[in-house]
Image 1 (cartoon, rainbow, N blue to C red):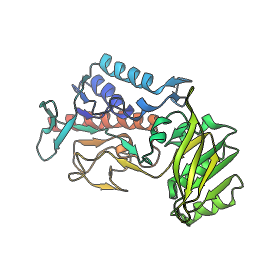
Image 2 (cartoon, one colour):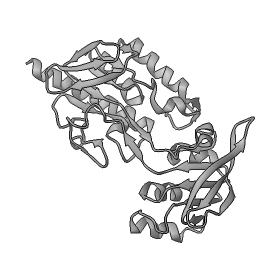
Image 3 (tube, rainbow, N blue to C red):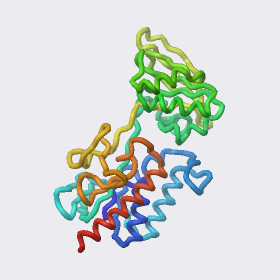
Image 4 (tube, helix red, strand yellow):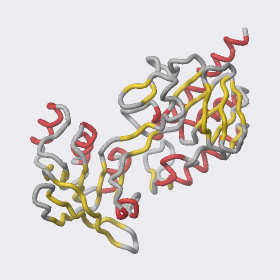
Length: 306
């Protein structure tokens, strides 16, 4: 079994694959550990009250190795799913053959592209309200975006914040009407229309967000807003470059899987975690899908061996 990607989905698939004696090889990719390696506190991983994101991923890697999985620090540049066994080509010039493939390459949040945004990632700037909203209890929070994700995150964050400011470039939202109705009825939410974020302001030692600078797109007038958290909700991009022309996708590039399964449109190829999950995007759900993928790969290999 070949596993491409080293987030919670990939490492969990490696643990289960090793226990099933599938000789799993996991290719870590360009960002070993995935998105959690740029996360600070993780407080929603079952059984651990608090852990740093990089430490959690190191624990998962160590577990996969101890179970018997082979971990390769390589990047897959091409994946051929027309052949069987399937063939993957690494940047190390290594060629990997496997009877089943688990795709766990994840997705990347779309960002604003500001230097200050990058500086404060994990220190007040986030792309996941359900992951980090808890840290901003009793604070003012800004949400950037105008689609379903932005409105849903703004509504969710009212559970913690004293006030949520939604920043949107246009004069109307793209979100579904029912979500807009909920947003406009919520007394904790203020909308700044026709506005874009120009800068994020914060402290140096320790790093922390203190506010944002927004610009009116019509008048170019600048305004400073105080807030302790900035949630960027302008979408995610699934990391599907290896398979977008080989597997069925939907919802902007997420890999399609069968109902209640991780099976993709090609038998023996499975997708787990954020590469297929456009709804939850949580570490624990990704890990669950990694388990499912390994169990389904085991059944697939057993069937073709008959």
